[in-house]
Length: 158
Ligand SMILES: Cc1cc2nc3c(=O)[nH]c(=O)nc-3n(C[C@H](O)[C@H](O)[C@H](O)COP(=O)(O)O)c2cc1C
Image (cartoon, rainbow, N blue to C red; front, top):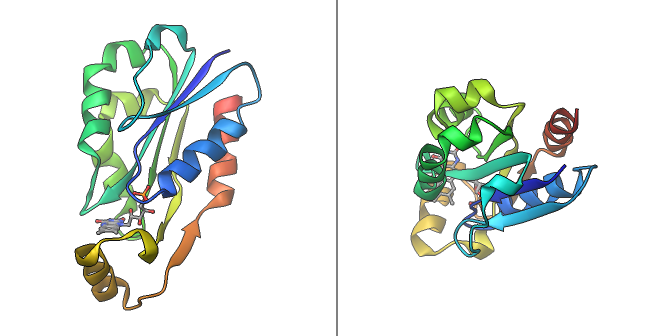
């Protein structure tokens, strides 16, 4: 069983989730692929493909959406898992639904809404101003949901 965990992350939270998910894949070889930096290997070689990203201003990274639509026929033949990192508990379900095509969501073995973080040290001036206003704090907030990551990894491994 060969697994790819393919992700995008702006400040590092979805990357943490991707690495934790990869570490919990119990069988065979696992590759973690950053869609922004890494050369995309041939997807044919993988049996299992996990795709994830983070939500900024309501949407997942464009490159994640494009990756899903471009590779949809192939992804439908694989075991797939889909996750997002985000901070808006009221909109997270809607954000997840908008992040991935319906067909892929229905096909996925695991779907995860894995919490998120506000990492002030990694934000630019504008982002800091936006988050200070929304979250009413200038302190970083750590809400990566480790229980949800565990559950997601277990569902994938079943
Ligand atoms: C400028 C900015 C805008 C954000 N907008 C949203 C949003 O619209 N909805 C949401 O649920 N979370 C939002 N978030 C929270 C991020 O999804 C959260 O910080 C996530 O952990 C980021 O993951 P990343 O570091 O992998 O990009 C926003 C965060 C920032 C910094």
